[in-house]
Length: 431
Picture 1: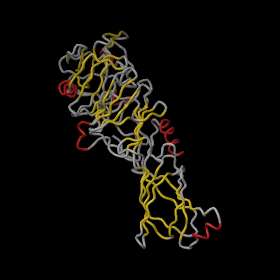
Picture 2: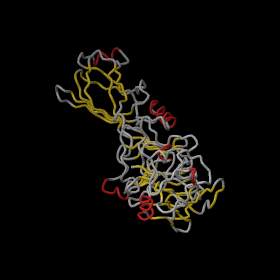
Picture 3: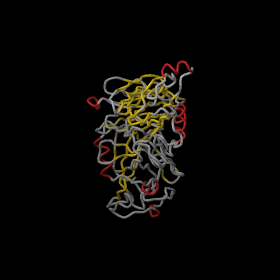
Picture 4: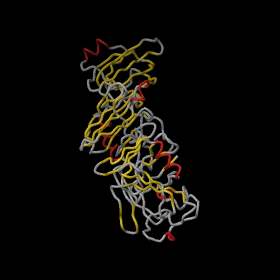
């Protein structure tokens, strides 16, 4: 929904050159065309946004960035290949950044390629880098800087209720790592094996032993970026976190903006209701045609209505007014598609909240809590059914003003419409 910012940002490593520790040793190796070097690095902190960062969840990344800057979360070993441009002579160095080994090189122009990569092709606990540039080494050189490109993306689950998290790449499973209350991985490849992507998923378990799966075969991440997720469902389309992202932003009095979940249908569905701040949250109950979301009047005359019209995406659409960014009420046809094209599991409990789970043709899912409905200031049927408004108005009955979908605990559905003054759940959609 939003454009990507810069594709790849640069960290700065340095190669320092030191003389031998004694005059006699120096005399034995002294040559105007040779210099002894030791490989060290410092990360350039002049631009604190070395990885693409977001205002949302910035405090989470700051903790990781401090560990990257200090080297604690950087792959400790390196492999560098220097090729003399004039002669074609190749020098290969493998070592550890903290070893400070001395190596003799000729002065001249070199092309440099290499990596600083932790073990593991997919999930690892350290940040990975690659090197590819041309440098000049002279007898008077003191410091040579190498530019290191990020060779991984950082995936963070910021949820203290997650007890364990593993990635199944379609063939083998690898555990995420733990840092404070976070589960994380620096991933320098796809989360899945290409030929097994239909069988790939992230598996997790909450502290209450509830389990979930996130199917990853249709997900793409960019190296040099980080992605933070505060909540998960049984399967969802993970959106990228970008600079200035409005994903999951707080709407005063109306919870947080949800993630867009691709179920493999004609439209994407919000991962939670308006008024909620997480998946296992009932959200608010709103009258139809009330763009303020505040009315509790029991008179349908106080709410917008015109026979046969649709308010989807208009000034009377609460989702459009409050969430913006392309969110709107679903049409009745889209609610019907959700009902008929998904596989449903009813009377599901998620973090103590009862509801139904709809799994789309692509394996991704959304959870719909049984929030019941409101008439005036009285509430009914909580934990027994969910009633979802559409933005489409009926053309025969003013009393039952807007078409809706009722989802009952026993698996029954109904689409008989509802008075516009009755408060119901709103589950937004977007393109």
